[in-house]
Amino acid sequence: PAATYAVRVSTEFPIYENDRVEQFSRILQADDADEHLDLLGRLMFDSHAGYAACGLTEPGTDRLVELVRENHKNGLFGARITGGGSGGTVAIVGRRGCRSVVDDIASRYQNETGRATYVFAGSSPGCDEFGSIVLRRADQDRAARRHNLPSGSV
Image 1 (cartoon, rainbow, N blue to C red):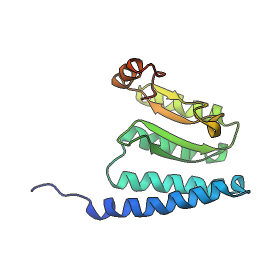
Image 2: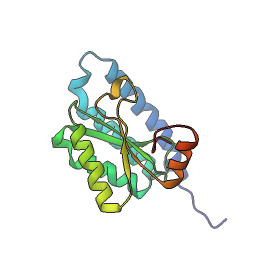
Image 3: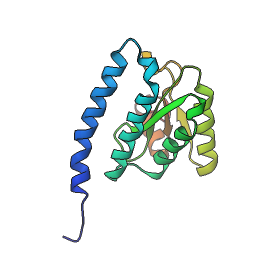
Image 4: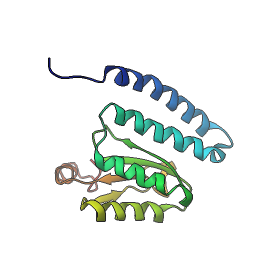
């Protein structure tokens, strides 16, 4: 009875998110998708902000998204939390050849926070350059070992 819930924002999020996903999909299917990286990035940043408004992100993923935003001039266009929320993985959209920028962000984050990071690479046909930065926790590493997965992949 004493709790207050963000009902409106939590109701709006899936509606707006569905629209963002449809726009993102249409852009990716277009012949000139690489000319719309700024829009793809903005959709990802908006998605992250909407998810955060629902209280589903955590300071670590919010910081990583902000570091990506700061590196726009270095070929990164957008980022958002992914993989179930409440911390863990941040997906990034950027130009090919930006892996070193992503590695620098992961290193900077680790130096700032002391939290280990792992950068997925080659996890799908579209991610041969870089994929996501994952915040590793000890319980995630144990779960990964139990399932014979790379450390940080759970």
